[in-house]
Image (cartoon, rainbow, N blue to C red; front, side, top):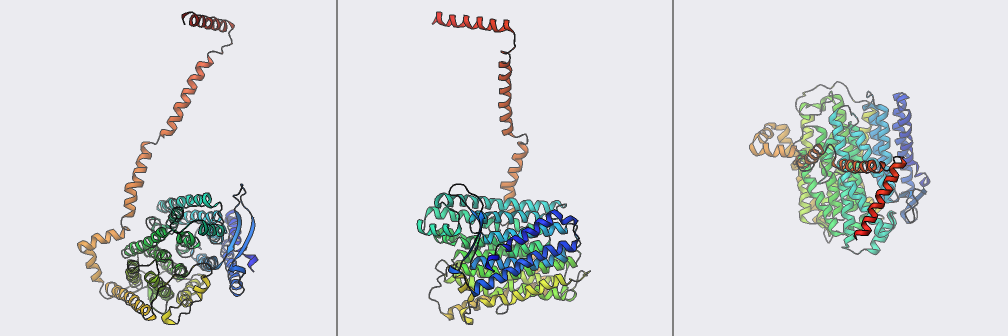
Length: 630
């Protein structure tokens, strides 16, 4: 089965090509079957490959499939080649399985849309690009996939392009992520300049041999790669594009936030962890960025009204947890949270999409209420996803992955009490805004009447993801619950184990109890303020400081205003002043000078013999005068 690895990305690409060329002529049933089926076949092949890889690991726990040489220029010869190890296998399985469930959901969700086949063409290209990114054997091919998901995010966020707001949101995402992509590209140039290769295994091996810990080059490369990661994964200070990305259809939000684009930065840092290990300052920066982002995004989520924007800020915050784990060297913990987050965040976005679809496309959760009675399946699955996001103890996957990150933030050699405190405060905020969303949307009096019920193609993905959101965490149990940890053992072949120091099980239990109390306290606060006594939250919101902070948090801490005031606004002003383009003016002047000289020289070629003779005579007189008077 390993030899079929190339089919995993190839099948979605093939489906994209067919849909792009013939989609308009196809019946919707055929387009849907092709779009969903292609990702489903890739998921089946991925599972079979995973079974073989785990049951009969290849030599060195690594399978390499070279297809052909892509570019051949001297020593620079990147290949179209795929690299399968524990890390890329995990990413591949999540992308294909979760991607298939989102595609199946989309078949019903987008059924009445006039751009049905175009939607699946973009979605298939998105999945193919992400698979290329995670399976790439060299950083050039990885960068191709990286830019591919950026292109697809632009196409899908602005899918309903007739609305100018959607087009603006798509441009914002595209331009903001270009900033990070530019930094990453410079980092790749620097890597090739110093190491002579962009093959991932060669680069990591050469870096560890040629650069010492604290190397300036390693630091520069790591910071540039971090720049790419914060752009693609919407981390501070490039997080502003993700909330506006909610302009796209709900399945797009699920795919971007759960299985593809925003996790690319996490994968990049994990894949190049050797360079970050050699640059402790850059690794510390990763942790600081993650800690700051998870708090900023969490507070912003507290004040949102649009249910999808709550989940968008939640994604930024949860990716912040992954960055925090990466920054303290807990790479496997970061990837563990990536996996569980993919399950429950896809579930939450699809659940939100089902609500929006059934409630006349209403996004404001304060206009909903009482939905648990009208849409019971959506309620129970959404509740499971919310429990996992809030890390409800013992029964949800999110508890085990987030608990491991918090524990590593305290105990690892690169951890600190401040980072742990940021994580624990973030956990409290997460519980509050998550169950604020649940109580406001599903409890109380119904303010709207659902005009339909989700069908089978929506219900099946919700149930499947709800099951994964419950059981997904059981593959990595803490020491206090028996330390059943096949995930860490599986990932250890690729990612180093973080040093946890000398801490007893009783200490770990104490930290778990603290985390549990914090989470349950957040849920209790949400219950009181948004269900039992909603007037309390209203009074706080109307108070002076509550109004100011509410607007501040609602605006995402004013980052959009900051960027518009100091970057976008001045750039637009300069563009208006310079609308005739001073650079073109310079070239116009040069062209005019050339034309003048052309006119002068042209007068010397009149074709008249008398003019030529007069010119010769005049020249002779001038020369004789110069000779006589010098």
